[in-house]
Length: 312
Image 1 (cartoon, helix red, strand yellow):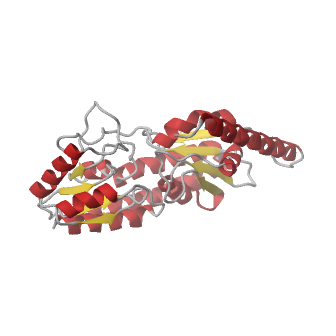
Image 2 (cartoon, rainbow, N blue to C red):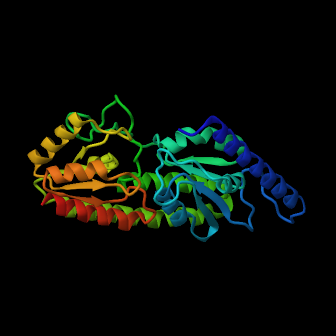
Image 3 (tube, rainbow, N blue to C red):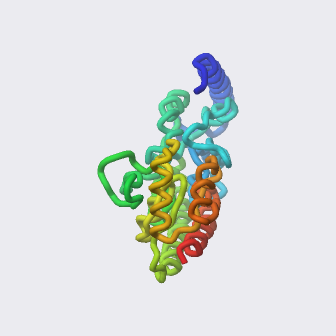
């Protein structure tokens, strides 16, 4: 837990930095030959976009192309459940035209979005999961990923190519609203990306089609939407950030043995100590897969290959 004093000093320091930057930008715009309305991008400038997590930056860069300048809040290797933005990031936020959030319950967004919009009230906000079907976290007893309407919502919405198509559409719509002069170009970029994502979904389905064993084990329950799209069973050891009890460890080991599982997949942002204990008990290994990679398509290919190998 951070101390209250440290929190207040960091927050108000960031706030003052943003005020200075925004005020300076305002003075500069007074003398500009072409200026944009509040919340809009001028015809001669790039759209400044901030995303909460790395995977969302992939969609912004693919749809926005050369017309966007993207900053990511949660950096590589950081934990989105506990990360606090730096003063420099808050300054970038104060100059942003658009913020792209997952909108599916990522803890970083739940903790900070109200502060972000308060610091930059003219910044547009894109909810990347708008219109999508959110699912609950894996059930404790069975580890399946199904569409239940109880329990905590799984925030990892982006880890499904089908959901990636929806994210691309939401990003396109938001960029067009902020920068309407380039709406046609954003639409064309989104269509090209959509073709790639449809092909990726079909490719993954083909790779998994012959697998009789449909279960895989993860320590952190990040792959529920992926499992849902491709009819797999995600067995998760951890319950979204909670340290697992000895009773849960025993239950997970029993599940692994029942399904013939020998690999425990781990996320780079989380400790692997308990996962390694489980792997030793089942005579297996741990293997990293990254739910937060910005190389979206290649990352899902690599994860698929790892799942296929583990389920053989």
